[in-house]
Amino acid sequence: MINTHEILDTIHMIDQEHLDIRTITMGVSLLDCAHPDPKEACRRIYDRICQRAERLVPVGEAIEMEYGIPIVNKRISVTPIALVAGCSETEDYTPFAEAMDRAADACGVNFIGGFSALVHKGFTTGDRRLIRAIPTALAATERVCSSVNVASSKAGINMDAVAAMGRAIKETAALTADAGGMGCAKLVVFANAVEDNPFMAGAFHGVGEAECAIHVGVSGPGVVHHALKKIPGASFDEVAETVKRTAFRITRMGQLVGMEASSRLGVPFGIVDLSLAPTPAVGDSVARILEEMGLEVCGGHGTTAALALLNDAVKKGGVMASSHVGGLSGAFIPVSEDEGMIAAVRSGALSLDKLEAMTCVCSVGLDMIAVPGDTPAETISAIIADEAAVGMVNSKTTAVRIIPAPGKSVGDTVVFGGLLGSAPVMPVHPGSAAVFVSRGGRIPAPLHSLKN
Image (cartoon, rainbow, N blue to C red; front, top):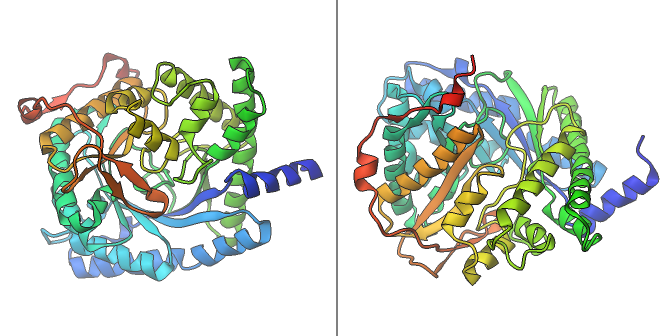
């Protein structure tokens, strides 16, 4: 039973502490849109997306108005296009991305995810064609997001795919150089990708999902930060309990919105992703939460331990609030989208190596990292391989969203705007990884993957 105090408390969190629903994402299956004629397949894709999602934005806006809960984004995710386009008689998959983009525009959503391939154990012909098309597809579209899963705890790391994605990222940056390499901000390389992720750029609608589903991604770093400000000097036991209670309330709000959207759209409710997703706004930062625990600056010694506590407490609080928690669920640490992270990088306290260590204990991985534009493709591939190894060995989802900013060097800033914010260009190690990456093949899965 919700009482008056809880209602007023939620209103305060929305008004003063940046609480919002970060996204309502509709997942749409496109499996039966496959056709040998690529033009027919693209037509079917456009029609299916528009048919399923035509009411998504109006319903989201109506819920916002009625409940007073900000819903920042309305988005769509679709079946990995490599699976849908595989039977089409064409070498060029860019038209499939363009069909997705037109449908996203018609539906009024800000992003559509699923220009994706799953290649953690090997490539199909369709997978290879999709990866080759990623740079032109992201340069030619505004709303399309792409992801490729190159590793899993069961299969190991597909190093041929890792090498291909390093090259794809470099080419994408070059083709979108006039926008600071913006195309790379819409491209994620995964290990252990999940099928029900509502957050971009890595969302896709997995083959184990229903025909259509509604997923909700909540936010709330500002709420957690304010809660910890009220208990200065408290023990870590009390810090963990405070974060758990706060995550519970945030997740309940997400559950309410998701169930309401599901009912109004006549679509099954999928999951609540209870990730703490920061924004560039002051007061909405994961880094500032860690500093509130007593760190002088995010990136200093103790940062990984503080983040481990935060991530664990968020999950424990969230799973008590909803029976359908999924997606990525934890604490995100994107650099460009978190003003505290940006400040820590600028001060020299937060390096790429420290961020990699932090990804061992939190959601996802190296996210929205800008590096010098002349960074070799092999170095980018090696960064991807390192992060994939973290995910593979720890049986968790990790990812890399990295931008080799054209014409930029260490200390420069790349501005993307909106929720994507701005990223200070970070240094990478100068040693070459070319011979390492060129070996190809697969890095085997760890022994503990043999659980059957």
